[in-house]
Image 1 (cartoon, helix red, strand yellow):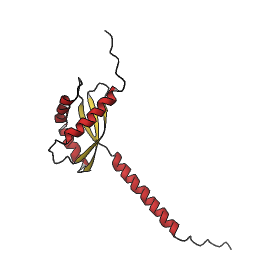
Image 2 (spheres, rainbow, N blue to C red):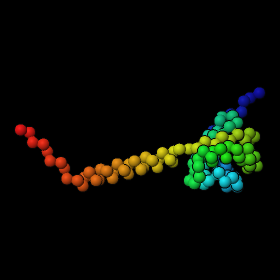
Image 3 (tube, one colour):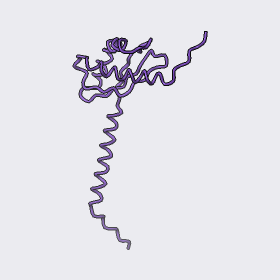
Length: 132
């Protein structure tokens, strides 16, 4: 029996499609713990058995949202079965993605540093100490 060659970039395309479909399916969830969620990325295992779904939250508590999404993972996976034309639909595992949070913190730090530098530039220099 000849082994079927893998289709190049297939897992990236599957992950991308899962990302789009999960984003649509989440809108139908009625759970109040799920706020305004953005699906940032999806990583699929080589055997398509599992998918890590990274999300961020604009409004709502990240921990509560992660719990609610993981509780709804079976329902969402069922929705993917109907949308995806693949043999194995992965089990979904939701993870809060702190990337946007960190980016906002870094941006705030940079702005603060620039403001401090501008303030320092406006102050007159301290008189130099005289050497006797």
